[in-house]
Image 1 (spheres, rainbow, N blue to C red):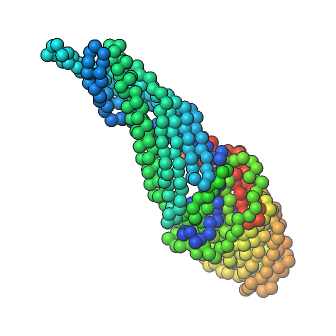
Image 2 (image 1 turned 90 degrees about the horizontal axis):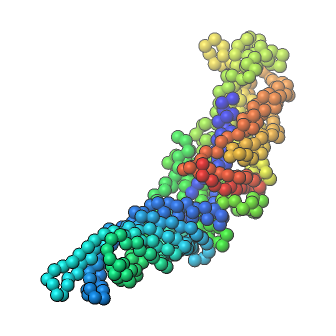
Image 3 (image 1 turned 45 degrees about the vertical axis):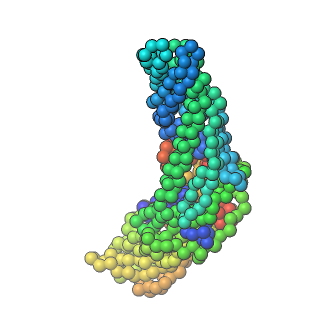
Length: 479
């Protein structure tokens, strides 16, 4: 039954393949990130920024200030470093202007060193002192607007505008006289605020450039096996609405290092599935052409071929078991073992309907007899198996059930005379219904675990099928 396991795994791998082909081609997978999903991604980016932005060094600040009684004093602030940034409130919105991220009420902690020097006009001496200080930045507001475009099959992320505003700062001075504190605050409060605003804005610009480079470096083809590869290029520009960010991607399989001719597939996005009302972070819409392209690749590569020499009831693979149904077979080859050489004769027909995936698989089964050291083909039977798969997601696992809809057989050729096809069909139909289909359903009942990705997994996922499309709706959660 190993071939059955492989077939099941391949089918459900296709259902959960995520793909990211030029703009004149059609997309067969659509990824919709809702406001809830965008908020989740925004929080991830902010969390990453809070850790990656620091420590952030600011340029040295120096200024001469006039202090009552003392006179002109030169003050230098150095080693100014933002050591911690904390964001407590943020929002993200999408629309015609782009993706707008706004941060309010953020705070930051800085450390620095100070030094001052001045001369007393009555005496030819210079007086100086130095020490350290900490700065608390409060009420920091940050805003940025991003645009996303598709360029040569990759996403292009651009920063349209950004800004940072510091509302208030407080300084704790270690060492020095009281006059120094007053002079330091009065003279440098604005300069420290401006330095923080400039440094944070520059860091945001650098971060967006790095993120854009990462997006552009993503491969345009992902190998799935040593045979098949998945097109991972974007189609058209992302669509920004008030409720979601929509990405349309090609999503077709091809033989490795071959180009997919996607215009042989034609699709129209079906009506919204019921999972749209479930308020999930993401919705993946996948057209049946994705499954068809994978099926075609594996068929052309000759991988839909199996040698069956072991079954639960091993007596079925011996001519003695068939002596009453095919007497000539037993007469010519008494008590010889049988091997079934099964191959798909043409790409399976796949159609997605209401809450089910229909598949019709045409097969040729050559009956080989092991006579001494020889393998002798004695007959070929053509079969057509029609089945439906009902998929579900339960506890982060993909499950389902298979139902046999129809089964037909016909004789292609025979070296052992005419066969009683109605009897052979009855035996094979019974084998399918009592052995193969229950075995497959047992594996589906156990489920296939959905793997996590970079520490995140699906949560509260739902799957729906309707009108040539599969819809998967889910939240994401940290593992």
